[in-house]
Amino acid sequence: MGEEDVLASVSKIIVEVLDEDNLEVTRELSATNVEAWDSLNHIVIVAEVEDEFGLNFKTTDLLNLVNVGDFVDLVLKELSEKN
Amino acid sequence: MNRQPCFKSFQASIWESYPQLASAIGRMQDEFGPDWERDFDNFIRFFFDSQGSLDKAIRGYAAFALEAMKLQHRFQKTRRYQSSTFRQASELVYNDRDYMESLYLPGILLSHFLWRHHFLQQGFFDRFFLPEIPNEARVFCDIGVGTGFYSNRLLEKTSLEGVGVDLNPVSLDWAKGLVSKSGFASRYSAVVADIGSEDFSQMFEVIVSVEVLEHLEDPLAFLQALHLSLKPGGIGFIAAAVNGENADHIYLYESEKAVEQHVVAAGFEVLHSSADAAYTPRFTGEIVPVNAAFVVKSKSI
Image (tube, rainbow over all chains, first blue to last red; front, side, top):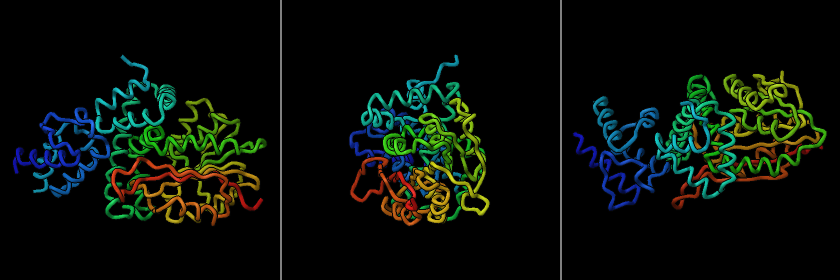
């Protein structure tokens, strides 16, 4: 699975969890830019991404995420290690 | 430049590094207003020597909060805690000194101001427990000191001397450090002890045990030992987590009533009680962590 596919899946989850149909999700997007992206929604996004890809992120990895791009890269890294 | 840490620098730091957690600040400001900001600002200025030490604690808090919320999300589906034995909790938390010092204890310390139910518990402690302390009381015992936050609060707001008791020396070191920063070291001693053991025979006029019960396999036995350590006429403050998952939570209380039943069964009479939710449920059926707190006295008076 390539970066574009992962970004598309993660974007879909973010839009659904935050209930923001018009939100344009880019790699640069972060919680700073979206009012609805609070801690509780953040965890739901993390959990949904884990379920989508069959992953279980370490807390230390989650701490280092600054934006969607970092999250996509983490998913790609975990998927490659899993395979 | 080593700037003086304060609320503003805390706010800037958490927005820069963990924006998804920073919304908690706005919620607390909206609900509790300038008094909360002032108290938190005073706390930060007093207990953090440098912005570096504050940033380290913020990272610890971020990890603690993310982990707790992740576990809570899982708990919503499973309705049971991940750990079920003290040994499991110890392996995950207590036996890992680095985890305790870099994540767990800083996380709990900052949660006293960033988590709604923890902050409300402070107010309940001040308004309902402190006035009940007998004038002639001289010594309190804090069993399960955590960060030492409540030991420090008693030393700050009363003239009591205190004893901190815990099974974990790392927690005791933290408690002593906090108390020492406040200038109360001469009034406080800390000891590794198990109040349930036959060797522990001391009795106190004032006892405090905050968020210990959910960390135990047999909280009723602990409460019974706690009751034996309270002198007739003495007063106690007992608090527990309800439906709040964390890495070291073992015993699941599903209601504040269940906690109260244990407290009463152990021999205490409840004078005041409080149950505070961590946040407003976002959907029907959402399980929200609650802190159940009780001001108690011995029924044997």
